[in-house]
Length: 321
Image 1 (tube, rainbow, N blue to C red):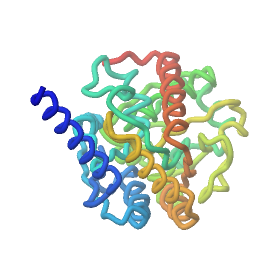
Image 2: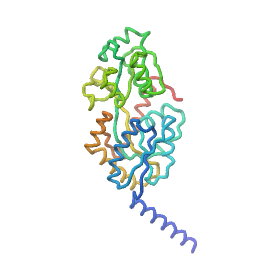
Image 3: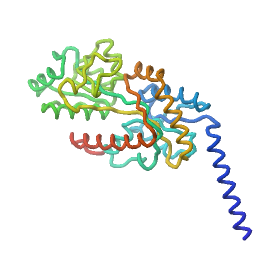
Image 4: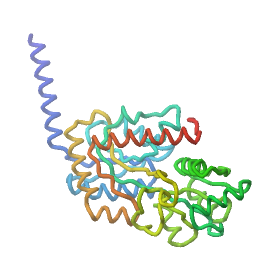
C-alpha cells in the first residue's frame, strides 16, 4: 500500500512540476530550426517574424540553420527535439507539400511528427525569359514555342520551377526540353546568357534581376497582382485560368508539445504576422502575402496544399525517388 501511495505522490509531483513549467513558459531562450542556409528566403522570413515574437514572449529566439539534403536534416532534427516549446520549426512547402510526393521515403512524417502553430507568409513565382527573346507576353511566348519546338528549352534549380515549367507546357500544349540545375542562381545565370528559353523562379530572388532589367518577366503565379511588382500581370489574367502556384513558410513544433504552449506560441506568431511593420518588411524583401492562420486552420491549409501539389506532380509525370 505504501508503495502505491509513494508512486501516486511521485506522479502528482511530476504533473505539478510539468504544469508549473507550462505556466511559466517561456523562461529561457527558444531555438528556431530553419532547414535552409542563412540568407535563404525562409531564413530571412524567420528572422523578421521571430524578432517580433520574442518581444511578445519575453525571451530570445535563436535561429539555428540546419540545411542540406532537401531539408531532411533540419526536419529530422526538429521532429526529434524535446517537445517542450523550446524548439520550434520554421519550415516551408517544399518539405511538407512537395517532398511527400517526390520521395519514396522521408526521415520525418509531416502529419505525425509535427503540430502546426501557424502560417507566416505565402510566396509566388515569376515566369522569366532572356532579354533577347522577342517576346513580351505569355501569348507571344506560346507562339514562339510553337514555332520553335526543336530549339525551345526551360531550366530550373528547384523542384517548384520544374513542376511549374512542365505544367505551363502542358497547358499551352507545346514542347520544350527540360534542363535541370543544382541551384536557381546557376539557372538564372544561364537564362541571362541565353542558354535556354524560359524558367520559373521565386519572386523574392528574382526582384533584383527585374530591377536591374537583366531578365524579362511575363507574369506571376499569384491569383492577384502582388506588392513590389504591381506592373507584372498574373498568368491567370494573361490567359491561364487557375494557374496559381504558391509556396509557404510557417511554424510547427514537435509532436506532443503541450497544447498550452502551442497556444502561447500561436498568439505570439499571430501578433507578428498581423503587424503592419512586419508586412512591410515582407513586401520589401519578398513581395509575399502574410499567411494568417490559427493552428487548426494552418493544419487544414497544409493538408490541402499537399494534395494540390501531389496532383500537379502526378499530372506532369514526375516519379518519386
